[in-house]
Length: 185
Image 1 (cartoon, rainbow, N blue to C red):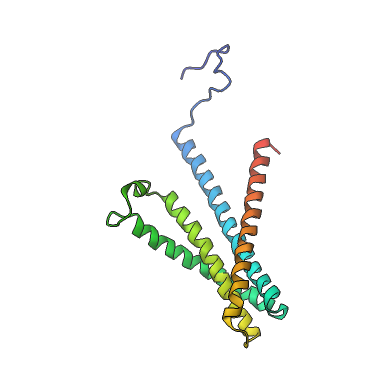
Image 2: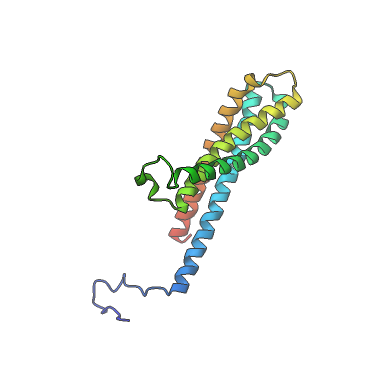
């Protein structure tokens, strides 16, 4: 390999190219790190959505129902995430196959990155819906005379606000960690 001359302007930036094995190891380590970050992001959003739905019940309906509402909202957000992922996979399979009405320019980038985006979007929708339904069911356990229609706006808004707060906190923590690792702290 040709080494740059010491007085060359490119001497400082010229680096040897890593071998294929080293590049694969670096890429695998990066992919694992990104996967863990995605998992933590979704867990934070699910917990924050459940807490938000429970807070909506506490504010709009009754403080007495909050513990069971939060417990059921946690279960609902986990199930909602799974349902959201299922919907995302079905939609991705339908929209990005050759026998569909979606124009070809939208189907050319049919990759796992597209599926990941669909999984995130539909997962977050599923978390909000699941947390809301779970909180309503938990409230009905504690207060059986309350109608579902009275609780829906409180739980859905609470779940969405909780998800936004959870996503903001997650992104801030990830950004801070990246900044600290880049600066060598």
